[in-house]
Length: 576
Image (cartoon, helix red, strand yellow):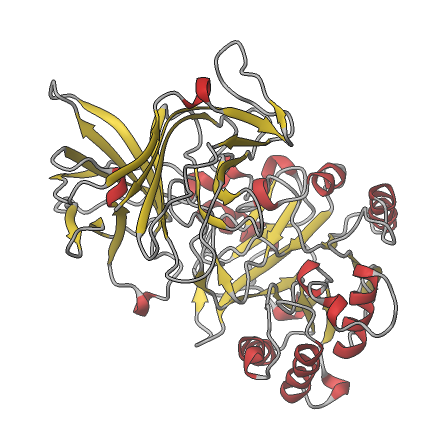
């Protein structure tokens, strides 16, 4: 006896698990293969993951393939030809080939000036050339109805000269929604609407979010953020539905406190979306072996959209999310790295977490523990089960620590919604040789200039800097970097009291960069969000044996929230 659809959906949403008997295939309207950020190069080999994705799609019988942008890592004419060759190899019969949809994005314009032949300006010329070489059926901006389903496709440059204005973007979506009452309206963009899916607070589009908030029918499909499809934050619901496709290259994520702050990892994820009259069903796959991420819990989106019943509203989704917990016998082991010591390795058994929060406390002369630093690192959730080691290892630079002092390390597992579970701890005494201090500043706020585009920024009444544009520069003395030794490792440390109240990814990005010439970046970090108090951050860099040496450098600050502000309480340059 066939279960009625409303009972099926009710059971699915109540348990978070898709029943084994599934859904009648006869009711399916369409099956769509989706990928993004393929970042191919100039060789056929660089299309290998695309080929694996297309072969998976073919095995699943998809009828449309969407690539949501950054198809190539640069504007590579040969790359586009090889991409087309790959499509035609997997689908040699043009008559049975799936419908192809391409989103046009920034990476496919990079380096275009070096290869352009058509005389068209900038982005428009790059996209026209890309379309021609790729033999792409759709232009950069279009809308169409396929199998009774409405689609709109927009390039990354909506709002720029030569492309739709945001007002026209809004009108196009409004017309399509009005013409298709009760149906999902699929809006394909490269950049996701801001503050929806993983990393979109930082990498999302505010104008897109403002527009889409008006249209609950919209299902936004995007790329850009380079997330892992193993992450349950790549689907979101609020005023509408947003689905992000992760990437088919390397995925990252900015992690507070770490150097470098973006921790890139190889990625092999694609999605297959089934469209039914009353729901969407999205399954996520690893193209290497066609294994499925979370096969018992695919993403199921009821249709039509009803905000009060939407299962992927963050507060609702968090209730279904398992909170990782360390095994009772888990310990933290701290081991010096190399001789002489350059850092300290933090090792612990994994708990299946999205991230781990590593806090360091320093033991004071009176025996108390004071907060000292914080680093967040990603867990092994993104790896195939066979590739997981079961143990996490992370090295903290010796630049964090004072030789001979005692420190306590605590590690907490975090779920996909950044909820912490109880921590495990370990203590150690720093044993590395003391670094040589080359320069220090005990009160940077009083003795150094903080500027915004060259103009002085005054401290607020509370003593914090908050540059209106979100970008500021702490100008270091001209001679600080003038006499560095070649081929040496250096630490640049700073103590910062930052306030970033608007979420996990709304922190300060801090960069140590040359002031003149090529303005080379020596190192960068991302501060801890929230109100953590004063914490230490360390930037490690090596001076070259040959070539140009850093001369005059500054500390650049770039905020992620208009409510952020900061105080720098100490600076020091050391030779390890």
